[in-house]
Image (tube, rainbow, N blue to C red):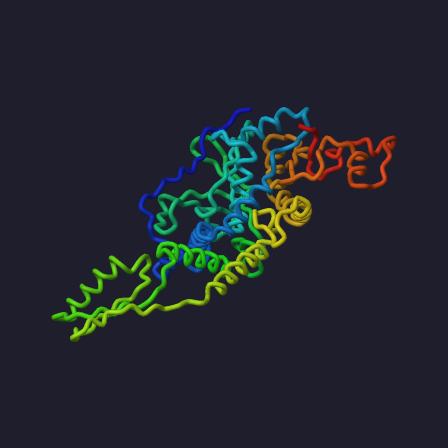
Length: 410
């Protein structure tokens, strides 16, 4: 099956991006462009969400795990369909598999509430390529019929932008290809052009978790020493000299960040220099605040602690992990998988005419309580339940009745 070599949209890496969007983007960037809908008040909302995910450890872990579970462990399909097998192995000219593209789409959707995939073919429909496009670089056009891509929305230039129509419309390109864009978005009332991530109500607790981590880092940098005020007894000629003396003392002794405030007073007959410690008794409050923030982040994501490496007070339990996985599978994972796969199946059937009804994501739990090669009667016996080795239904293997789309035992 012929594959298109490259995506038409090449992203240029921009060096030296030191400004943090969540801190530095303000009214100066709030200009409106008649071509596209702004994503957030300043059009930088996806940048802020991406930055937050790089600061909060629990928040990021949940996003990573949700994307991994949603993209599954591969695909099952009709073995007689060689074309489907080839598509799942290599879905674009970059050599990516269908699962790799799906994992990126799931990550963007979990992080940003939006995801974009570029569809590439030709007028003869002789091949199909699917490319994930970074959602932070995509904006919806004002006509709601196309998506505009740009590598740096802080410095938008129309000459650098590429526009693609929203599927099922296609546009011709000079290289002979026709291209389209599929836009996934999570529904939210009052937001028509972009989706909103499911954890939006947990943004503040994600910030709390980040700040408590930062507080602990500052204590570690200071070797857990007490903060306080250092009064230096000495004579200075001017205020500038006093400031210079405080700066030198601060740089050498204050720690990172400064845990000691220095004060200079006039010299007397006796040296009255002294250190006045500031005792802090709020360590427990900080820890409980961090623990509560972690719990709230998990709730905001509609997720489960054991599936993201967060233990309960009673420790680890494989039964708990399996139970929470079953709940997550039926409430979150399968729903998201179907939402992502339905447009992809439609594109494959439209462009290549391949029946995709047998194409499904393979799901497997992170732990197993019973080996998949056990027969049902053996599993029932191990659990102390009634069993009948002669019952044909109990002759099946555990893998054959599991809900993980397994077709064989490997």
